[in-house]
Image 1: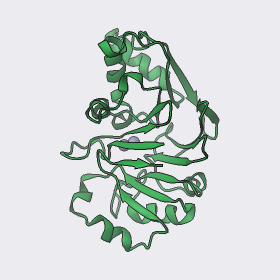
Image 2: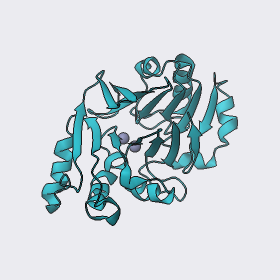
Image 3: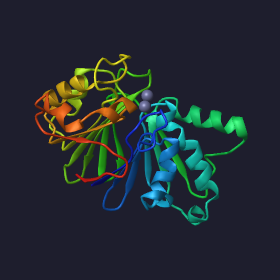
Amino acid sequence: MKLTILGSGTSVPHPQRSSSGFWLEMESSSLLLDCSASAVHRMAQETLDWANLDAIWISHFHLDHVGGLPAFLFGTKYAPETQAREKPLKIFGAKGLRELIEAFDRAGEYNLLKQPFPVEIREVESLEKFEIFDCLEAVALDTPHTPESLAIHLRYKNNKTIVYTADTGFTKTIAALARAVDLLLMECSFVKDKPVETHLELAEAMSLARRAKPKRVVLTHLYPEWNQVDFPAEVKKFSPPCAVIEARDGLKLEV
Ligand SMILES: [Zn+2]
Ligand SMILES: [Zn+2]
């Protein structure tokens, strides 16, 4: 699997870090993890085959994670690149996802689910095991962020595993979900003295990494306060148990 980081930032406008979006490319399928408004154009900027994207995972309904979904569906409805497409687009997320898309529809009579190709919406619950593709199994886990927010564990057919926490406060269950995964893609909104309970700061992220013992950690969802920080030096203070990588827009990782 190849992971391309489209957006390593938050909802705060930033010159280098756009909002959440992570493209996962497999042998014969592709999955977008979260779809911020900026992710829609970042896919094209990274020359990814957005017109043939197979599936989208929406972790929760904050706009820096879902705000691009209606815009993307508005684009695929009319783009020349998608008019001949026949294969379905699957969209996975928490309960309420369909209602959210329908609310956009009502606001502008967009008919976003009426596309040149079939769109399948699948709402999942915490601890539900589901199949995204034949080759990719998933388990969702609720997180202390919003009522609907979910982390996701992905297992590819070659047994490689990824956990994407999306936005979350501190909870040990994340470490259990991410136990020994090949890649833990974890939010680390703040450096320290976090102003809200519903995000992580570095000490908490490193505590989760120590518990989970993943092969590699990527820290993302970085608020602008990270601008002034020497990332490797700050991380080193916590003697992390594995490589800890600072997410940046455009970073590509083989998993
Ligand atoms: Zn966010
Ligand atoms: Zn959020």
